[in-house]
Length: 112
Image 1 (cartoon, rainbow, N blue to C red):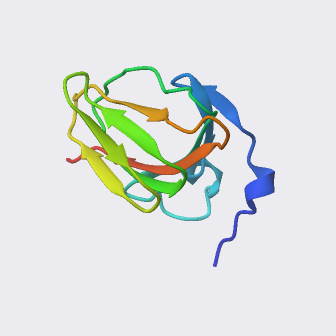
Image 2 (image 1 turned 30 degrees about the vertical axis):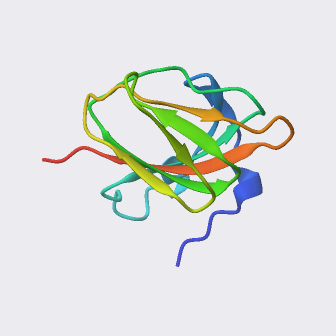
Image 3 (image 1 turned 180 degrees about the vertical axis):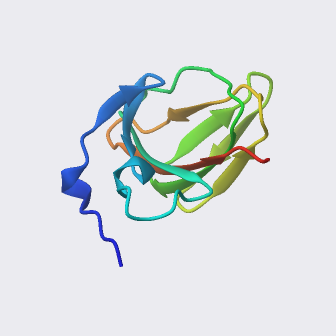
């Protein structure tokens, strides 16, 4: 068993929001997992930069309410909702609360 305490992982800026790259902290004594995990925090009324990448990606809302967009279509997400973005699809997420942080888990991977 390998446990990583959340308070041991620093928050970084990425995509215009606060992120913790969880899988990078697993250490070299275990095999590289097939997915990346990133904990993300978005301040009230703020959003991630619209971006795209080779990775496929899913968001699971852990706390708060959000609007996700692929630059064309927008959808509302509540706590525990999940969304999926295929490889190279533009996407962003916005915290629609005026008072509370949005927290979500990003799961990303490249097939092949």
